[in-house]
Image (cartoon, rainbow, N blue to C red):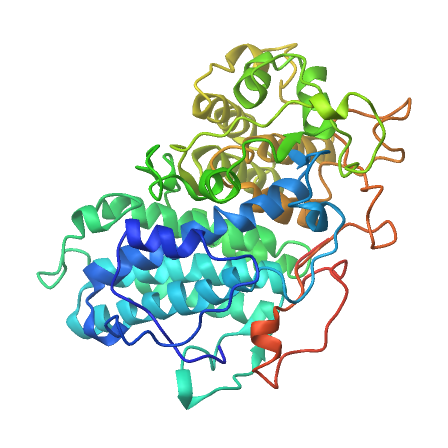
Amino acid sequence: MNLTIKKSLYIFVAALSVTLFGCKRELDINKDPNKPDVSQGSPKLLFPAAVMSTAGRVGGELNIIGGIWSQFYTQSWSSSQYRTIDAYNLQSNDYNGSYTELFSGALVNYQYVIDTAKSRGDWNFYLMGTVMKAYTVEVLVDLYDKIPYSESLQGAANLNPKFDDGYSIYTDLLSKIDDALGKDFTAETNTPPGVTDLVFKGKMDMWIKFANTLKLKMYLRMVNAKPAEAQAGIQKLYSSGAKFLDADAAVAGFTETPDKQNPFYAYNIQRLNTTTNLRASKTFVSWLQASQDTLRLQYYYGTNTPIVINQGDYLGTDPTYGKATVLIQSATDPVELISTPESYFLQAEARLRYYSGDQTQSLYEKGVLAAFAETGNDGSGYIAPGGAYAFPVAGSFDQKLQAIIVQKWASLAYGCHALEAFFERNRTGYPKESTVYSNVPGYVPGQFVYSPNGVTGGAFPERLVYPNVERSRNTNTPAEVPITTPVWWAK
């Protein structure tokens, strides 16, 4: 990263406020003389600050990009805050803050935690730092394809680090996770993380499951570009007896108090002082209605019959748009890193691909039930024989995969976690793209539609452009490519 590293020793509340409320075009990359340097910290102090940097950005403004591009909600007809997202028209001066914070806030601190924990034989924090660094780097790779990695985080020692390709970065991350998993978690030198662990409150068995599930996700993301390596990696996970998440890897504990709200709510509602920017998209609503999924319609929109806006039609003349239903947001929702339903759907896909579908149906059903449970509902009737979400037992491989991924898409509307739905559609092509716009007869509920205000010639976005904070300072920044260019693993 080509910037002078700054990082203070703040935790939770301070981290949240710094992470969330910068201007969209902010640039705060200089060292603050009023705050201690990172080297004066400790893993216990810096780890929660780093986690909040990751959660605040991935679960905040990046979640909004993911949610709009995953067509869970769309720009309000009466405002303009997110028009550039709905028009696929993001520029290099947009969202510099997230890029900067994920490097100088999250990754710098994770690396300090990793290095310090290793020197002390503190394998608890070594694993925690390694997993969270891998998670954060993966998000950046999946957004930008190539990023500074092997030469990054050196501050003034290297102001022009090279950009590594996504595959090489994935390979190194997987190796580092394996190294961390191989440490002795019974050693006397280990430090109990306790409440400084904002994800699992010090339960190291859950961190091991998180590490395995993150590996599973990364290998599945490789299935198009590196199918043999993906299969070998997944089969090794299973043959080694790896356990996967059966509870959320999430940052919770948010409240209604300003500066303690979850980042999606804080960024979209508190920061803008309005509740009406994001409205019901016909794409998601029509799918829920076609499935008679009244439970989740009520959860997300407060009604079985939301008034919708066709995705991206913020300049449309439909007279109902002015009364379109607002997305319900809660200040207390968690930021999911990997959710329970996501874990089950990942496992279901792996068993479908490499184990002749053994356990696929049961894992799929666990995923659906867990997705309903997160919204406070029971989805058992939907997966029963004849139910709207019954697994297609007699279907083809593609039909079964589509069922898994579409249900995963629906689950990712919860928990400030929509960015993963954007990534997964780019990987799998599900939900499918509609051949007609959503206000035309013959539209299939839930299929994605291209925004009528889109500037990319009918092609959906696949990545973000490099921010000006990097391009203006690092001579090694790659030449710009259109945001419709797939990243290395995409279908």
